[in-house]
Length: 266
Figure (spheres, rainbow, N blue to C red):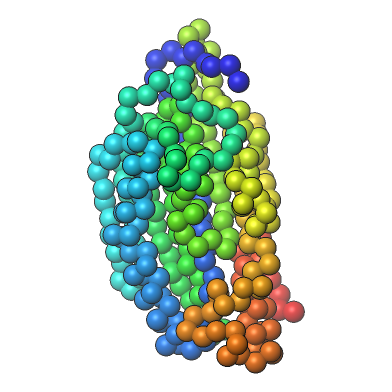
C-alpha cells in the first residue's frame, strides 16, 4: 500500500479489545476456592503490571502513568498511559502479518493506553471455573495495536479468545481529504501466526464499511489433554464415566462462551 502523506498528526484512533478465557474443573467447593485463590495470585495487579510494562518495553513506548488495583474477593485491574518515542512513519510496517514474539518485536505506540481487568469466577454446583481477562490496547497514530496481539495472547492460558478491532475518527491528507483508515485490513486472523491457525477454530464477523473487525477463537481437541483442565486431581484418578461427564461440562462451557448463548443440556 502506498504511503499516505498526511496533514499534521495522524488523528485516527485504533482500538484492540479482547477477552481471554481459561476454563478449569474443580470438584469440591474447597477446590474451587483454592482455584480462585491461585488465579488471583497468578494474575494479581503486580504480575499484570509486569506483563503490560514488558509490552511497553518491547514496543519501545514511554510509560507516563500506572494505575493498578487488586480487588476483594478476587480480580485486578491495571491501566498504563503511554506515549511514543520518536518515530519515522516511513519505517512502520502496517501490513497484515503476525506480530513477532516478545524477544523480537520492534515497533512504537503513539499517545495511547493499555489496560487489563480480570474476572475469576466459578459455577456454584457443577465444578466449572472460568477465568476471564479483558485487555485493551488503544493508539492514536500510525501504529496498529494488532501488532501486540501475538505477544499478549502468549502471556495467558487461552482456551477461548474474542477479539474486536476498530478504527475511529479520521485524519486528513495534504489536500484536506478525510481518511477513515490508513492501512489495509481484511481480517484479524491475518495477524495470527500459523500456530494459532492450527490450534483454534476461528470465526470472523466484520463490518468493513464501518472499520469494525471481530474474530473469535476456540481451542481444538482440548479433551486430548484433560489434565490441563483439572485442578487438584488428575485424569488417571477418575473413573471413565466421571471423565466423560467432566469433558462434557468443559466442552459445554467453552461452546456457550464461544457462541455467546446458553445451550440446552444434552
